[in-house]
Amino acid sequence: MQVAPSILSADFGKLNEEVKAICDGGCDLVHVDIMDGHFVPNLTIGPVVVNTVAKVATKPLDIHLMVENNTFFVDLFAPLKPKYITFHIEEEKHPHRLIQKIKSLGIKAGVVLNPHTPPSLIKYLIADLDMVLLMSVNPGFGGQKFIQNVIPKAEELKELIKLYNPSCLIEVDGGVNDENISLLKEAGVDIVVAGSYVYGSEDYKEAIESLKGKPIL
Image (cartoon, helix red, strand yellow):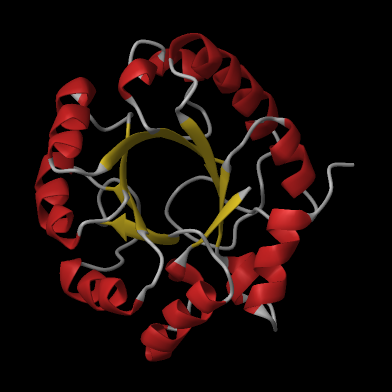
C-alpha cells in the first residue's frame, strides 16, 4: 500500500516543515488538492504555493484537480512536474483528449470518480489511464467520514482494470484510517490519501506505517 498524505490537513503556517515531515516519515507521494471554489465549495492553493511544496518535497507530487476548466489548470501545474495529475470525470467533456495532453507533458494521468459515479462510466478510458482515484467522501473539505460504499466500488473497478489495463492503479481519498485500511487492501486499492489521519496524529511516521503495514484481517 502506498500512502499519499494530503497537505490540505497540514498546518499552513509551517507548510515547509509539514511537507518535509511526511516525506521523512516515509510517505510515497505528497497529495495536493487544488480547488477553485466552483466545482467544489472551497478554495485552496495555486501554483506559487505548490512550487514551494515541490522544492521542499523529497517525494513526488500527486495533484488532484477539483476544478472547472481542467485544461487551464493542467497548464498551470504541469511545469512543476508532478508524478500524477488527476481530474474529475464529472467535469470534463473531452476526457480522452485531456488524458493524452497530460501524458504528452511527461506526467501520469488519472481520473477521479465522485462517490455517486459508477466505475462503468470510465470503462472505455481505463486502457489509457495510469490511475483512477475513488472519492470516499464528497470532495471539497478534509476530515469527513468514510463512505463505506467505496469498498464494493473499488472491487468493481479492480475487475475492469484486470480486463482493460492491469497496470492502472486505484487510489482512494477521504476518511482513510487504520480501521478501514485492511478493507481497502482487500478490495485491491494501491494508494490511499490520508490527510486528517496523518496530520492529526502525534507521530506522522507511525501513522503512515500503520497504513502501509497493518495486516489484512
